[in-house]
Length: 345
Image 1 (cartoon, rainbow, N blue to C red):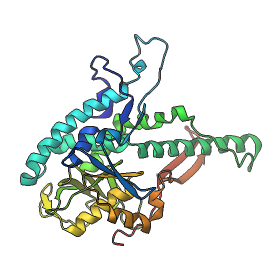
Image 2 (image 1 turned 180 degrees about the vertical axis):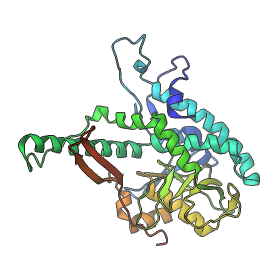
Image 3 (image 1 turned 30 degrees about the vertical axis):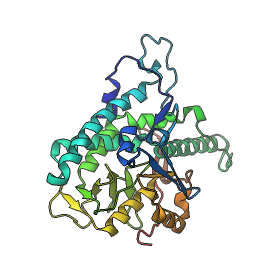
Image 4 (image 1 turned 135 degrees about the vertical axis):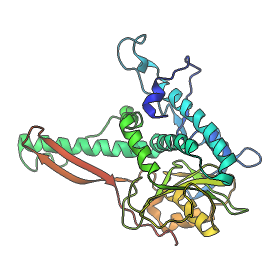
């Protein structure tokens, strides 16, 4: 179900949710231990602790959209919990679809109907996280600064106000993220990109487990390329449980399975690499039902930049001022920064 379609499905206002999860509790509960606890590894402090799934991957009023318009009775956006409730609908459908996939997938692979339902939530989960909010704000602020510099140079000449920096007000930082999450053109394009990849279900070796993170739709770029969902050679891993993960790979890379959408038992080395994608792509937190983060700690020490939760991920790769023609203006293109990671360190 696309983000825009969720807005049209409303239940009567429920009790207000203050701590709002950007990774749903129903998902995190699949990674708890026998005592319903989950271990959280902090990439900043390099330490782990045990807590509950309701106490991680959440921030106070994270999706609170504020009051818009003058007439609450006629403007649906005056429901402060609009986004939170829309996401609960998506989470409910994902929970049902993923439960079916976990039950059937290891035996028969990924059925087409479940694949279509799962991909819709993968896009939502990718766009809803704290890391994605940071990235959308980066892009928005970069665009504001490019435009501000052009205005100043046009008004006062080259070099004017070179040190000028503009940015979104903290209270408005949710806006660029929501514009992306609920734009059906963006979400459907992303779904089509993902559906164009080669899919399979990865099954962890006996006695081993997948980990997850505060951005569980984790992306690994091939050497020297950018980590976009449609990048050449890209691999995307979304663990569904400690036992099973959905893996999507760009078709230009080597085929690793005999049958598309099949369930494949991966080796311990492959599992380690897939788990390292979670460590690298997460903003700050990695989660597991086991307090076993030695490899995560080792990987962080080998790549210190991944431990900074405020690391800049976006850069301007193309900027041109178009002064003539029917639509004068600026052409600005952004992309994720290239990062060199040694996955086998």
